[in-house]
Image (tube, rainbow, N blue to C red):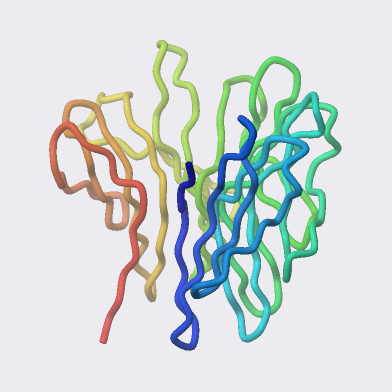
Length: 229
């Protein structure tokens, strides 16, 4: 079996990142047009979650297990760079390139909890303090800096969607007092910030500058892209 988890179009070529299952292990995959390119050799479980293309450079974010823990990785033109040490689980969920800088969002387990992390050119910064379980799912760069979305445990057996921007954070919910949500994707156009995800009983939701709009109940918004002619 196989699955495509991210798609990007550049110069008429369609790129997709995902996985292919081989002997009960997942191989991280990149599809470039009609060509299927394995990024890992199948010895350890791996997945590719995100692809981003700039000119002739193809960036893919994901993870590969070292046999014990998941190791966050980024592949540039099929060459892998480790983002975590492998001493604990870590995954890279999203990659975005802006003005030559490579941004990656994901998490690394520190102690008992996952810590939401942002890597810039391989250098990590922590978005959460580790007191509550959290992960970063998507990153985008806009006029007002770097935007990252994800989720953080709210201490009441649920997670709440989060938006991080330049050191500040805010919760993303559907209704005031609702503490069940998740933010999965962020897109920035001009000064407007769009986020897709899930919230409480509302199902799939998108937020524009923090204001929610229900898309469909009983569903989840995984990705968002905004185009202005």
